[in-house]
Image (cartoon, helix red, strand yellow):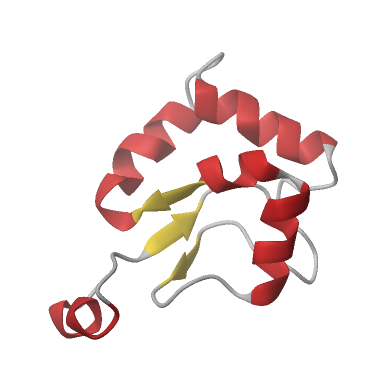
Length: 88
């Protein structure tokens, strides 16, 4: 995120590292100024989705955790796939 963008919104950009949900969110999408309404609705229906939204500053660490079998992020990713997310 550019410093100018951070100053405008006052919040750090977040990246979605979960599986894609058709018409709602694609894997590895970065959001700079809040979440779109469809993703907010999905995270209300499936609250664990919030754990798959990570600050860009922690993205490398979160992606590494996704690769670790049995880690919290990896388990949540699999749970999202079971709820209809597509591993693309």
